[in-house]
Image (cartoon, rainbow, N blue to C red):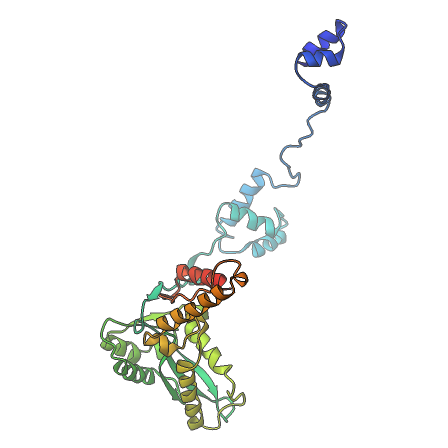
Length: 343
């Protein structure tokens, strides 16, 4: 089109008229002609002049894989080469070249142990999954503690049993579990017991007792408290409870009395946020569904009385939490979405 217009102008035609004949604007033709005069300014891929050549990279690899240096790190190889009057590249360049060919990985006995995340456990009702742990309670003697063994049902969050002793052993744990399982009528194959990896949890006496009771043990990864969040959260509630003696308990009898009162408050008075603000005992005995439905009726009545305040059209979600899980990302996402909706 530019060629045709140029020929028309040479023959005596006006440029604007020639553009109109080709149904294109004069400004477009001017832009096209200008672009033909401007050189391509693209620079292409950036090339580093100081980059290592292919031969230098091969020299680094052959040096690192040689019999003399194959068991040494680049931080040691480079100084040793300098002692011989040889310089190939910096330590960082050595590491970068080794990483490119995947020779910078953990190897041999130095490879750190990786613990698998525990399998997801889901509780659909009480008496299916229990969580337990041991926490320290201060006593009058500095450096000595009382040990509180605390077992809870993760579905209802109810404390199902506890023991307070001056030591922590596998024998105490096993006796406690026998007593609690008998009290709650746990049958073989019904219960999963989750805990951390401490001696009282994984001791031979405790494991043999669980096998005899027909209870399936489950353990979290070492030093990963988030694998057992229910017990950790319960301990925090216990130690942040008003009246908890920050300076320690005067005697083990005083500590037992305090824990007994805490258990009653926690099970029968405390409105737990993760189970829609009902008490653990209400949920454990199946009374929470009626409580939540009655709350929903109150909210619907309030909405009908003053609908202008409920401009989004929804009332607070009071649906019963039907499943509770350990290490289950799907249940965690569902819980977060419900909390957002409630907010």
